[in-house]
Amino acid sequence: MTATESRSGLSLPHYPLPADVHPPHLFPDYRSTVSRSPSQPPLALRQELTEVTGPLLGQERVVPLDSDLTQQHDYEPIGQRIIVSGQVLDSDGRAVPDTLIEIWQANAAGRYRHEVDRWPAPLDANFSGLGRTMTDSEGRYRFTTIKPGAYPWSNHYNAWRPAHIHFSLFGRAFVQRLVTQMYFPDDPLFLYDPIKNSIPDPEGRERLVSSFSLEQTEADWALAFSWDIVLRGRDATPFESEVDAK
Ligand SMILES: [Fe+2]
Image 1 (cartoon, helix red, strand yellow):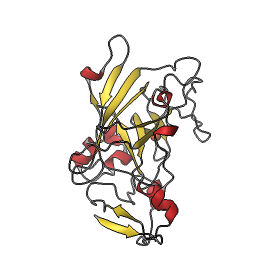
Image 2 (tube, helix red, strand yellow):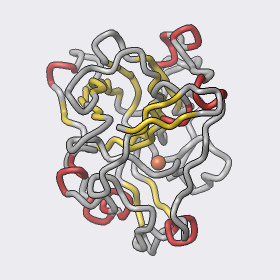
Image 3 (tube, helix red, strand yellow):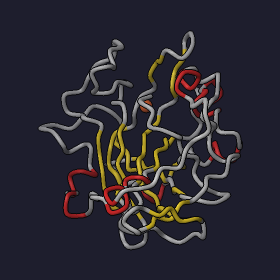
């Protein structure tokens, strides 16, 4: 761990990412990385007071309905109701409490409620696909949602993304934000997905796949998937180098 000092004299810890755990900026099979990956080495920028101190979205801005994506409209959305839960851990296996987790996902038909998503799958008036919650004192989180569908994308002919949920985690400041994706077990599209396959370590790829959790299911109500997120170290959950809309 190194510290980055700001002009204010405050400093943020900086944690270098192991190169063989996280995906590279450039992965030609993932076509858009060719045009957006940097051609020059990164420059370290001095951080201002704004980046170092926040503002952070804390508990006071998060309400219980934010973590139940099936209750945010007049009626329930179409789809398989699921519970997604887990724990956020640091490199020593310690729980990370009070951290904001945001998720976004496609609906059961595989379509996002977003203006650039125009493929001919139905929108669901009762599903926005956005959720957020804070981890509790043991670093645990829990969302209720519906299982997202697979969707086509323009990376190559007949390209389909495996079903997934996007996750964003905030640390102590905006500059520590981490973004990744959670997958569902045994998806036949894994083999053909260059985003998942851009992660160099096969074990790292598997760390993005949730597990079916019978003990977290609710009888006559919802299936459940469990997924822990490790922020740093050799067992880290692979994170994206920048936010990706896919
Ligand atoms: Fe996506």
